[in-house]
Length: 211
Image 1: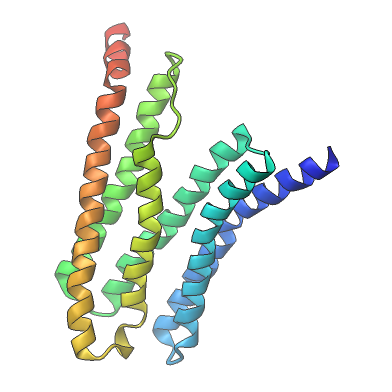
Image 2: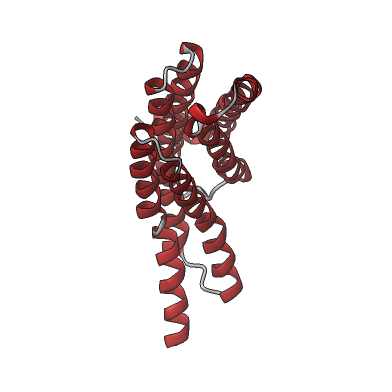
């Protein structure tokens, strides 16, 4: 029993570690902009990568050790939201303060707003559905969106954090790649809006009819 408790506590600690790790990323990312040392953006990238890896590792360990819990199922997506609510606005800021093309900053801003709105909308849909006893577990689309958002955010940060050190020809290659990644994320979130709305629409109809 004590061993199981220890494993459960370790997995939950790993899940919650995303919060301090992503704020350490933010701290070093900000300092990196105003420092001439490349060590700060590297450290920020390491913290962000560690936070992202914790999302993979906690689930793997929970299943391997047989300590999957309802608490963990609720905490894990919450910690993911904290990660992205810090990470994506920081990318907008990094683009703005480094005089990136306006189109790139706007693309990041549009995506960030869309990402946050999508999460709020899905939370609302699930809240309505739970009043009718619906299964509101995560869909594979939601899991896939989260899993893909980690490397996409990492790639964009990789470009922005080392902007001053990239040779011009490399920047000319990476910027269009960023647009592709950001466009993909925008489409993925719009698709997620549609799929979740369609899935939970019967409960919205019931709620409107009851009221």
